[in-house]
Length: 135
Image (tube, rainbow, N blue to C red; front, side, top):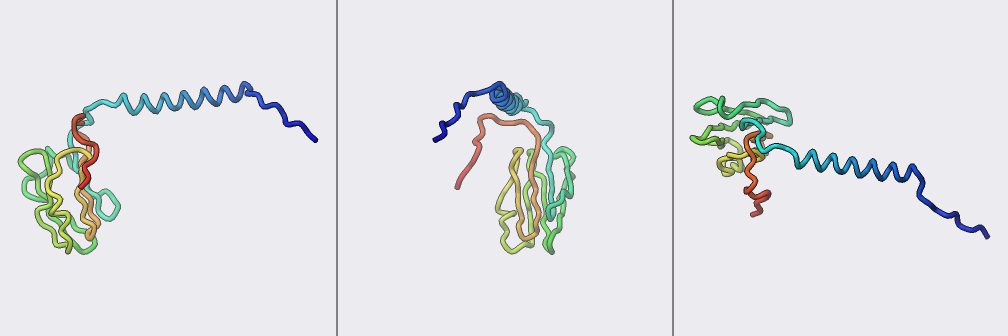
């Protein structure tokens, strides 16, 4: 009957542990050291999976912009404040119209039948805003 070998940590084991700890610290530092100002608020429009347009809200034209995809058309308007909403759409569900106005980075309007996504990026981060709203 063979006796089991004695398992002892070696120098390489210690180096692997140090490498993992260093990578974890670098990731934590990268996440927590981000500034709160990410530039100006920008609307990113994606049609059928490809970015169609990237417009800073301050440069968004008065009136409305029209986007078409998959046989449907939506009309996007700028609000008086910094925000966008879908004023009109010819898709059957009208979820994009009922989404309302988006005003903060991370918010989006999705029209599934037209395969169009409008999302806001950049702007200042409100630390007191909720992370998730359910229901």
